Image 1 (cartoon, one colour):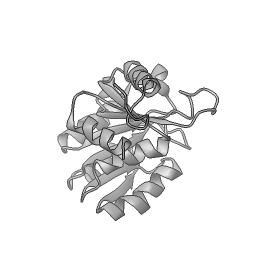
Image 2 (tube, rainbow, N blue to C red):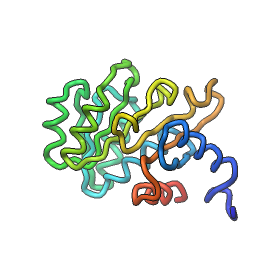
Image 3 (spheres, rainbow, N blue to C red):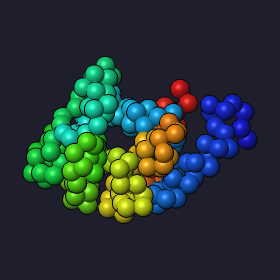
Amino acid sequence: GYFYSRSGNPNRTALERAVAALEGGGEAVAFASGSAATLAVFSLAAAGGRVVCSSDCYHGTAKQLREMLPRWGGTAEFVDTTNLDAVRRALEPGAALLWVETPSNPLLRVSDLAALAGLARSCGALLGCDNTFASPVLQQPFALGADLVMHSSTKYLGGHSDVLGGVVVVREAPSATLEALRTFQGA
């Protein structure tokens, strides 16, 4: 059952199940904003980890990686994720996470998720995809090899910018990744 609404409630559970189903993922974790969802994902790599991120990304995402991740002991490197050689070079020194927006915000550049998934896997990194602009209607990153999918539900999932929220979907559940995200969610 539910005992404290921040820890869980029927509405949030319904939202999480719906978005996980739309993405074809295992389970989802909803947050108060897209930025909170993104920061929760970055927390997975924070303790001394390195995140490789699309150089063309939402300014709030870049700010989190430049200003907040280092506070936790992590580092970030920004690369053109449409350039697979550049991504490979950036991943090789032991990246924990490859974070890609496709289409990107604000330039709407499209990256090859299947190729990026192969590169991330070969280097032992997770592939996370911000699928906000495409939505599950136009793109399903899990089918292309992503490990995590994030939405700022304020945009297309909400429909009219009348809600504020974010959701992270994990490929498989249960998993350590899911539990880490749920811990961040309840903090």
